[in-house]
Image (cartoon, rainbow, N blue to C red):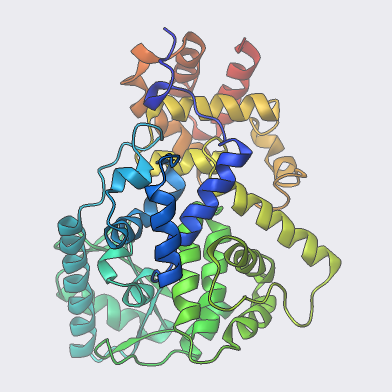
Length: 427
């Protein structure tokens, strides 16, 4: 059965270059803390034009859709005028402000219980990082999507904090500590140099009760860069928005340069420099961000930075790499397009990434450089058959063979072999 042209049943490739540039340019204007009068005037003119075509709704921007919906209200247009649900690969519900507010209330309740439990037990300071620390910088914390609350403690605190959680409204689980309202706490112990630096430079914040602490902005920017690299740029748009909010809230304009210099000590300078370059190119911050450290920047570092930049920029509109595949699986992508993504990657790569023994060679690929695939990518791919089986009737025959091989490959480390078999049979 051939898929219908257009919509969710069509195989999706990368956006054409001109459309990709239009997508980055338009979303870049919206991926901002606020819309200045000049941005509002430009966007209103653009969206009111008869020639305007809504952008496809794709996985890379799903994490910032609440912010996009917020700006659409400011612009006086409907969400569908901005993003076309029929032309993308995401079927998730359109952002619902009431539901976002409920989710935020649940997170606030869980965070309040965490801080109260630790305060009663006198555990010492609790460092909030990533979403828990960044959400207050957004126009409304409810607009900042997050999967869990991230907190860091020092090793001597661990026993006391765990006892406090166990006595409170939390239960331990394989995915972290889960509050009775369902919010997950990812509690990390500061055993790495960067974690210790985050704690050393942290300070209380007037918007949060004791014992909460927030990290120094420069160290937090380094953490965001490492987090972006570790997740392969899956949430690149949200990371760029976070950076914008942080930079525009800085009291000292020298902090971005200080962050780049600090990143050199934690092998994150290339990634952070790439993020700053992306922000300069597509989101037009109020003041240009530094694009390289003032010292310790070699030709090799510049090469790796450009590799990061190339990867991140591709992922702003990409739906067919392993990274895009993982994002689509996590964020409600069409199962048909998930299979198309697998086959497309195999055809482009000639199966070079389809055998475990060649993963190291894949990491040294001239396109991907030394950036590793997302952790557990093979395991995630093995899980896709649960989604795909329900869609078999609308898939092409060789996609059915792919499903069969993924299902039959029970040892997870053989998933790549299953894909290699599919690649050899694909006509």
